[in-house]
Image (cartoon, rainbow, N blue to C red; front, side, top):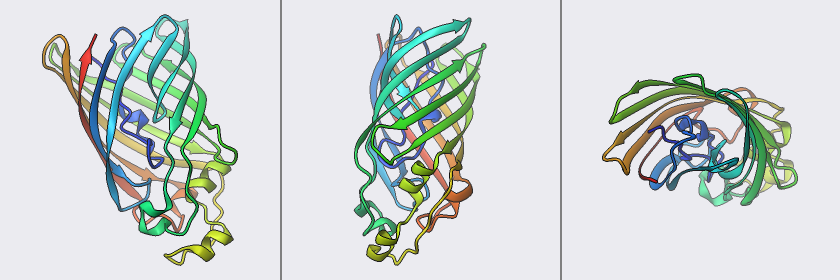
Length: 254
């Protein structure tokens, strides 16, 4: 059973949404796990978060992770193994007091997001691209490109490996990695002003292993590494350019 995971960016913009295996169109499941991720991508401080595991498809409707969001939407088939769709979801943002470097800065509010994607699944491969736009003024948008391969598929075990990269527009880069003059004046860490430009923000490698306990229950685990790129990497808010992340959970198939 191929598992989709949202161990990601629910709290701090860590785009691990691509760290899940390719979504199985014919398998519905629901479950829960726990993930360990940095407070935000580039932070040396980590936190544990609940990880909802859900993959539900009924006709053109779906509820499944998209670009780091627990999302629901509508899809259509463009060709054999080629789908496109639209989705809406939620992102938790970031509290200024969550990390030492962000104290004194503005909170990034809990907000809705929406977007569109295209996904091609030839055999054991899954290739996807998507765009996510924050539904809050000034928070910006991101493009994600990802690819994964099912390196092992047996009756009990599925192991997938993959890569992903993310491009962010200027508003998104400023929201997460910029420091305005007023924020610099309030910064507890004495940060200087910084205005990043749009560009590729991060790249990640990951692997996901699912183990089928019985016809109904499976365990699923993900581990990976993500590194910042470009202007995000040069931000004064970054004290660790490369982060590891992981999650483990249990899912019920129905």
